[in-house]
Image (cartoon, rainbow, N blue to C red; front, side, top):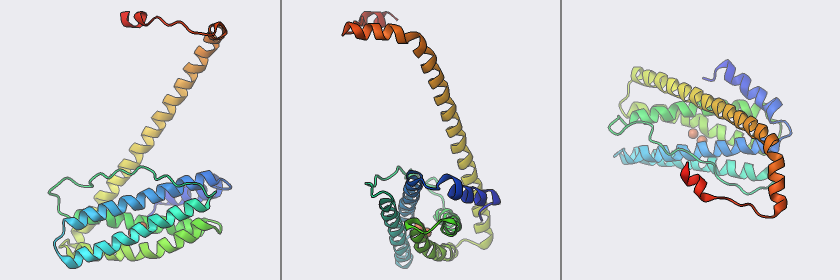
Length: 230
Ligand SMILES: [Fe+2]
Ligand SMILES: [Fe+2]
């Protein structure tokens, strides 16, 4: 379930942040495409750990639908300015260490399905008419089916309602922690950028004159031995 803060963030992002900026919308779509493609990778890994051919067929069908979402986001991306799509990086990192019961991977996927359904549904309601809104409508109708599909699969894999509830809470805590760690890293990176810019401009004031004089001479002499002595 999305928190009230998360809902407010989505509403503000659409009304203030994305308004009139195709660049920002395109970047957001790239992120959605990467998440869908990453989901296919995790589902496929989960599928290879299951022996039952019927379950494997169900997961394979699920993989195809996630793949089609990834393609739908690429088409939506191209419709904003018709630019060439370059895929964003996605992690391809196993969700659990080897030896962990496979149902836990599907519990993680289940939480992703619940959150994606709510986030995409809210976005499609808030967005004005356009390619992304249409794309999200189609994706949401599939994601709603995935929520029930993954829960039913967890039960068939032998997980009890209690165990599923516990794992879902743990997954939510993990996702919350990772979100704040990413945010912390962004703040530190931003602070480092500001600091480096200040140093650059402060040194620039003092080095501007000597640099111009050197450039007027047409060539720059550099004694490599001085560096070796350091
Ligand atoms: Fe999806
Ligand atoms: Fe899904």
